[in-house]
Image (cartoon, rainbow, N blue to C red; front, side, top):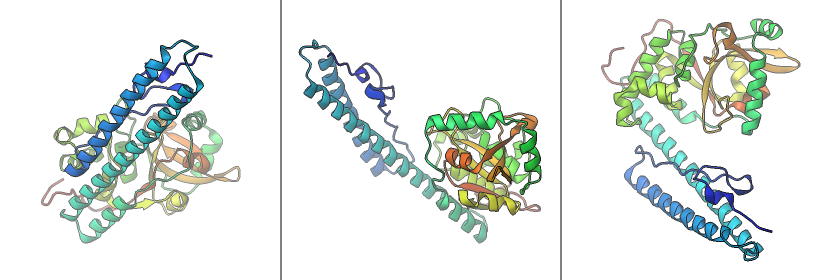
Length: 343
């Protein structure tokens, strides 16, 4: 039998032998302190060296005749590939965790040094450090199937009627996003009850003042929002600027809506990309077929079609992290982080 390791013909990140995937190694972000950047860069270089050596060994194996190839050599290459995938995956996970922790630390310092009141600082800091993974494990195929089911319910008269009779603020939509990555701004505008432009302006101010963003993004905040969207921590800061922010775990979504507070949630997007995110707003909860269901506003949809309906089980499978809720300060002026800043 002749073997061929297809991975050796492909670039990092492409499909590899036996259905596995060689993960691309993430770049080391500048937000990390110098010592951590050095450590991760050294580890990255070692992994890149190992991958090159593995590819060379695989190429040498592939050019052999079928008679010269042995099961032992093939199995050794397979084991080496598996070991590399595990190491690269672990590296990316540690790098992401370190970057997230550094971003949260930087945001927390900015909050502590701001002109916000003690209560505002406390709420923001608690929320920044309380945002955590949430939801149930699901595959990319599961996510795509759920989104198809959810979108197929657009305009469902039965669900619309039950949602209207349910509990929650039932807010109007703030508009439809187009080609940009500004779903979180739309969700914040909906939750805070302000026009899109007001929410976008507040988000841009935070980005311009945010040491957690690269200098180019700070200098071009509006373009950064359109291209990259908002970080979870930035959603929290903008939410606190418009009211009182709180973190809501998934098991409290229904109770929070029943109290009249909308919940912003970050979901795996339509394509099932587990590394991506799409921010929507939960506005009502209602019973259906013996289960808890939710109405959500999705800025990717237009007009009345923005109202989509999904079960609690579906929501948890698409959910990436805890929700964020805003208790509006109806008569207050949104505050920025910088001391002496004017809206």
